[in-house]
Length: 327
Image 1: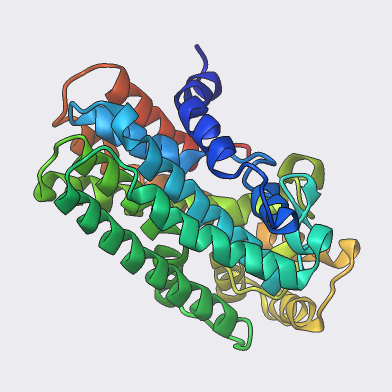
Image 2: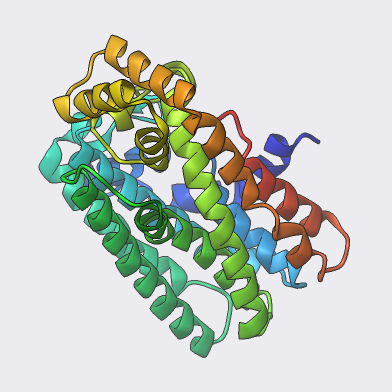
């Protein structure tokens, strides 16, 4: 079975749970808006990681399905709010929540998804003490995601961002939820805190590579592949690692032109293509490809501590997919 099919099979219980949790009820418009993006698609990487982490440590992944579903719900509430903030009108190949239901309802739906995620965690099949631990853990994670989002917003107002600042933003905004997937899945599976924290750090590291690669794909992949407009980061003037590297490496004329495109606002397709060409000439694209793959180095060492078998094999394949996928 190819990787995507294997991951889809693992995600099937989460798909079922999502549809049950997000069934339409009154007020109908709210629940339709809540379900709109979560049920439109997505790779389900975070919930699958939680289920695999549970199995990796010898647990029954069925017990982790509510927690895994909560992670996907958190991820989707951030997407709904991000699309409002970024004014993106397309997500997963469908109109974003605010484009379909209006800004006010989209914000309300995102808030409701956020709250609902914690209800889901309390449905996890584990002890009361562990449920309390996981609720607190996820609450801290969501706060850190908001910190990372604010850093990202602040970066849009700055001409320069240091690579270390960008990576800290990514760790908070994106990687930390992958860490929560590995941690919570392992804890539900019976792992002690030390083992769960080790898996959490491994997932956070690969999450950094995932976001760097995601930025790369946003710049280089066509819109029909992305399911959203290509080059959206460039159009919004975001200082991604690609941009940071390009501004550092580019010749003076290219640096000035790239800065003008980023700061000009609402770049045309031709300007986006010009910016990508500057990134290519400067070596920034190649450098980011290499950096994304570099985060895989510690994966095999960590997973080698666990028995050979399908959970370990799939976990390793999932982590590699995160930083090598075509989308």
